Amino acid sequence: MSCVYYLIEATKWLPVLVTCVIFAWGYFAYTFQLVIFSQQLLAQQTICLVVFNYLFISTVWSYLRTIFTPRFSIPKKFYLSPEIYADFVQAQNDQQRDEILAYVVKHNELPVYCRTYTGGYRFCEKCNLIKPDRCHHCSICRVCVLKMDHHCPWINNCVSFTNYKFFVLFLGYTFALCVFVAATTFPHFLGFWLPHPNSTYATNHTTTAHTGQELQVPKVLKADTSSPFSPQQHNNAVPFSVRFQILFLFFISGMMSFCVVFLFCYHIYLLLNNRSTLEAFRPPLMAHGPDRNAFNLGKLANLNQLFGRSKLLWFIPVYTTEGSGITFELRPQMSHDEEARNERFKFHDSRNKGDSNNITMSFNRSNTEMRTIGTGSGVPSHLGQSTGAV
Image (cartoon, rainbow, N blue to C red; front, side, top):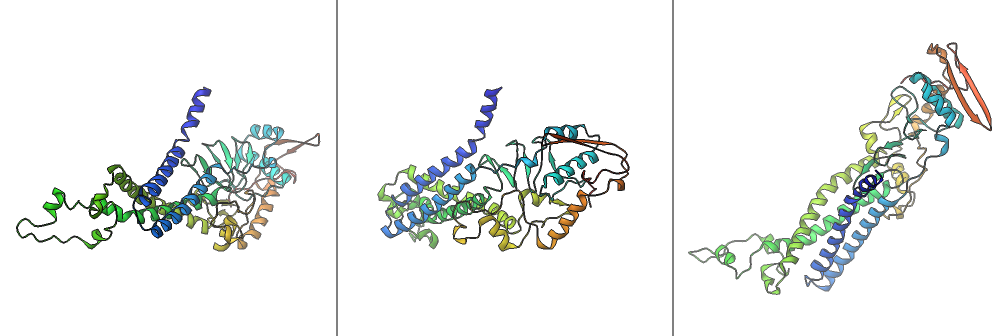
């Protein structure tokens, strides 16, 4: 069983391995097969190599940081103690479980505002903890992840609070790199398809059979006659393997830039509105109901929250994200009202619900066991009771 487990875990790294192979081959093909082999002017070679290496290093650096940046751990106070968890499991209905969670939130002073559809606090039964705001359980990583955006197989990791900046930079630099490579290989790509002037194809297709007049070739196809891949420079005897790699490099960079640009623009939109991918599809539930803009502080403040206050470090793959991933500032016009609703939720009188069930809770602290019993006439105030969704 353990061998199967490790085999499955190893296969999860295959997309990462494929990505690394593509990057390594792309660097070789562009640097050694295109720029150096093409016999361009020294100034052109220098510009191409400097720009390409800057974009390539930034892309790979961001990619590695996205993969290997460790997640922040969730503080112990969010976990249920064994005694309270036993009471939670034995609870007879959702209302009693919500009361237990509300008590833990009140007792441990947990800064949580996101709720479930029933109005209770979010609880992960697999990790045995009360979920912090914007935290979700990843079924692939098998752990609760702070400010989880999504699980990405291409990094074999979750895009979350600690590596979201690196993920956005990776998308941006990948798009810029692919556009640059596609643009600089395009003239050589055209030269690849132009026939050799002494070939049978050129003789039969570049002049008419009866008049001998030269056919009009579009100007764009005559743009780069200095390319070693064009028919004018065919005597350079460029190997077919090199020509094929340049052709393939153009197609790969073009397709990747087309795919990445949509994902990059979408995450810029999410970033400017301070949302995650999960929150875009399922808005956070607050005490007053679903709210897509619960954490939207304004575009500049949202950028500062992710990239930090120093704008010089925004485009460098170093960690500058503000906060702990546990608490998040609410939008100004909502924060005061949400605080008030949160307090009313914690101290809500159980008599309004007319619950006739007894609730037994044990909480072990400082070697003292506290057991409180609530009846239909009301639960003691230190044992918070939940309300339904507002």
